[in-house]
Length: 158
Image (cartoon, rainbow, N blue to C red):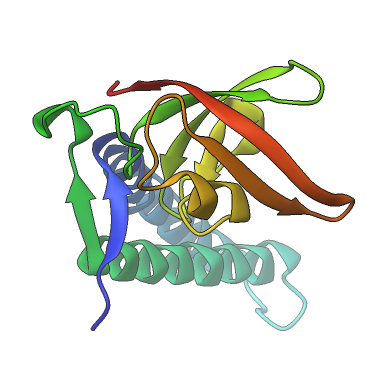
């Protein structure tokens, strides 16, 4: 079984969602189904069918989250000595060599990736190019328009 890397924050977010589904959403939809059953004929009862469909989505998401949490390997980057090397969980400030544009990304697991929040998957091309490199190194990243070169400006353990 392959363990999937995940940050402490990513694991916490999944656990919060799982708790919400189990303690709030699941009981609410069970109550909705019971209420809809009281209305009589189930064949033409839209409320009942909608509640059952919602129940299916909730149960599916609960199974998905339990599977992800069961297969994850939580990595606390703050517990790892800071060496200046880019590793899973670190935040990296990079500068585009051609445009001098600076970007800041945290390297996270696939389930946590959110480019708008500055979180990129460890399996993304840019993260794969950065991991193992150090501050001051130049890395080339294959992009649709060709190779883009970045200088690693700063590596932070957040």
